[in-house]
Image 1 (cartoon, rainbow, N blue to C red):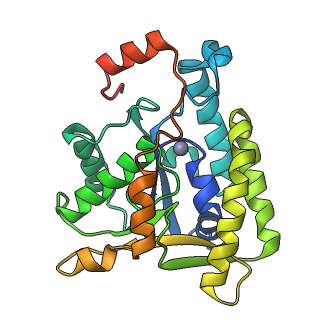
Image 2: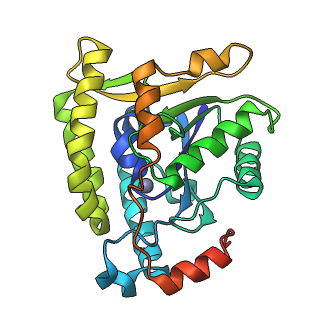
Image 3: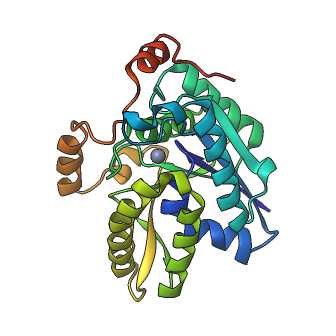
Length: 266
Ligand SMILES: [Zn+2]
């Protein structure tokens, strides 16, 4: 049995980026693999605008946990395989404590294969995503755990591995997205990025209409060169990463409070 750990910053990140692969591992290859979903936050501030402020926080966290559970059940990932690292939505830091939390998780669960959002060459430059990917990479690269799992990044601009799928499988993505009712405002829009990305990845996978793009991350002596993206992607991410996209709109008083206590809650 191969053990997989899929890290995500918020409930719904995996469904839009890794749904086809997770379905293959969880449902088509039923019983062969153990899949765990590791959610760094519960996405408790994921609603647009101040008119929704009264729903944000614990109430939204509870709803989004249920939404994640129903999407996970489609992927045949049982509730007991959903783990939450207790960080605050929008304030996932890249610090010693977070690295320690990720290290402890990997050391305890010992997944053979780890998936995380790309922390460098990505089109989804949300700091929660980026810091999650970077912390996972740091733990494995610096050998903070006593074994070396394989690491793949999703939502990447520099893919080197493709998981192909058929046009009729797109329906699965729709079903997974439909589980996240509180996120429809974002996911409907997100589909316009996901579909062309899958189409382009299919071209790169040669012979397939669609594919999910992933970046296998290398470790060891020559890893620096092997992990480096092509020049255009490096230039693009250099400028793109400086733009303040995807910042959640928090109530000011909540933001102040959160900043003063931006440590794990549980
Ligand atoms: Zn997210």
